[in-house]
Figure 1 (cartoon, rainbow, N blue to C red):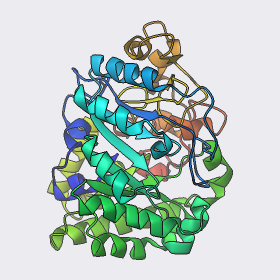
Figure 2 (cartoon, one colour):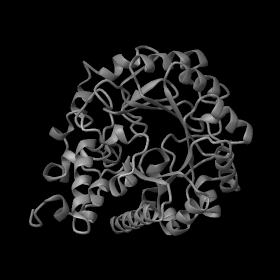
Figure 3 (cartoon, rainbow, N blue to C red):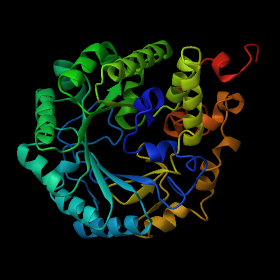
Figure 4 (cartoon, helix red, strand yellow):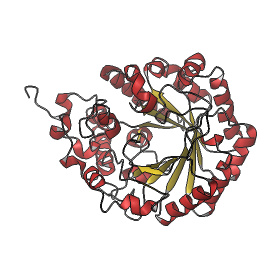
Length: 393
C-alpha cells in the first residue's frame, strides 16, 4: 500500500508505522523484526456476486475442502503464536460463512487485529452490529464505479445501492469503514464522481487498487489502464489528496498493488516541493517496495499458504499438515529464499532500474502472467528515462 496521505501530507494513520518504519526494509520474516506478516485469509470461495476482476474466481456455491470452524480457530491460534499483527478476512465473500463472527470474535479475544474485506451487499444493520461486537477493527467495502457501472462490473443489478447502504450501516454505529476500488477503464472515467462521493459521504478511507491479472482478472487485462492513463490517474489522485488536505477533509487515500506509485509521487514532488520530496524518498526507501512472501502472506479456504492472495498457483504448504510458522519460515524452501532475495533474480527492465530498492520488482503475480515469475511487472508505467535505463539500450 502507498499512502498518499502520508507521503504528501505527512498525516499519520494506523498502519503507517508498518509501511514506513526504518526497520521495515529488507526484513524477511514479516513486517517488523518481532512481527509476522499481515495475513489475508481467503476464508471462503463462495460469493453472492460475480465480479469481472475476481482473483479468487468466486462463485455462489459451497466451497469444497473449506477449513471447518474448529480448524479455523486453530489457525487463529497458530497465527497468534507467530505474532501476526493483522488478519484480513476475505473471500469470496466472508459474510457468507455462517461462523465468521465466531471466528472474528475468537481472533480478537486472543489478541489478533481482525479486519474484513466485503462487497458490502450483505452489510445489513444486524450484520454491521455483529461485526462491531466481534471486535473487527476495520471494514473494507468494495465498489467499482457508480450505479450501473458498478453493477455491471460486479455482475448484479442493485449491488451499488446495497453496498452504499451497508457502508452507511457501519458508519452509523461508529464502525471504522472505508471503500476499496479497482482502477480500470470504468473507474478511470468516473474518478471525479467517485471523489465527490467520497467527500459527500465523509468516507474516512479509500484504497485504489491496481488491476491484477490473475483469476478472472486475467480475462479483462484489456480493461486495465494504459501507461498514460495510469499517470493521469496518479496526477488526479495526488491533486485530490493535496486538495483534501488544504480543505481539512480527513480522508486517508491510498493506492495498492503497484509500487511504481510511490516513485511517481516522489518524482511529481521533486521540483514542486523539494523538501517534501526528500521526505517521500526516505519513506519509500524505508518501505522497500513489494513484500509479498515477506510482510504479506495469504491462506486459502483449503488451508494452502501463499506469498500473497494473487499467487495461488504456488502453494508453500498447508496448515492442515504443518503450522503456519513452520511454513512461513521456509527453511528448506528454495523458492521462498529466492523470493526474499529477489533482486538477484528479477529480469528485464528491473535489472537496470535505479528504483529497485524502492520497488523490489513490484508485483510478481502480474509478472507471472507473462509466463515468467521473474520477469518485469508489465504494469510498470515508468519510462526508461525515469528508471535510469539509457535510451539506446
